Length: 352
Image (cartoon, rainbow, N blue to C red):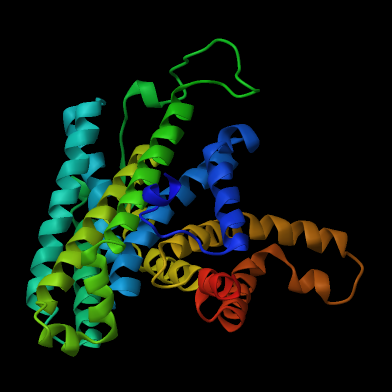
């Protein structure tokens, strides 16, 4: 049963299995295990970015397509929900319409980019996607009447998904059962289903063809596969999954802006998560997103505590100053690439 649920792609390593189970349990019970606004928000971001990173790995790790436009599709899903909620009101119908509109728009744009650009060499396609993504980001910033410009958009979601809606007077294991809790489990459930769907896609005959194209596109073309069509289909599927992740992020945040969905910094973060977890492995998205977002949210706090504990020791408190957390995050990334050249998943599977 479990093997079928995972599409036959089991972790194949005891340490990897234990790590994935720990992450699953932690995310499933996050509001109860880690109570507090910051920790639950971190867990929700991990859920969303697991889907976002997995969708990007479908292109990069399985199809061998290098794209810098993934945050553009992510932003389409987010802005779709935001605009629908503003113009249709705070109902579930607005969330559904916004999600569908964002997904369709992302698929259509990915189709156009794929058909016109995937015939060129990889580096030129990457540059084309970077140019398109930059143009869209500038357009969103300038159309302030529609998108809110640099200030972004604030909007209301259904009351049933906000902390104002209480479902029980008493706390459940010390946690208030309200709309915010329901909102978290909506994000968790949808992210889990999307991840399992992506896992099914990469382990289907379609996914096998993508891997053969990645290894040798000339040979795949020679035996009858239309390489451009398969790559375009992979790009569209990846774009739709990224847009759906953006929709979930918008429902959770209740705010959308260029910095939260369209910035190139997010694109770099996605690349780092893919490399850390392991390219060409859906489980790499789980581990990469979890490690990166936890470090991004708590490394500065840990460094501050370490600096206080080492006060009086020469040099170390200065090096561990919380303002230098980005430096140490970069050091951790370099070390992870050095010691795990195939990613955490590749290394653990190699040992398993």
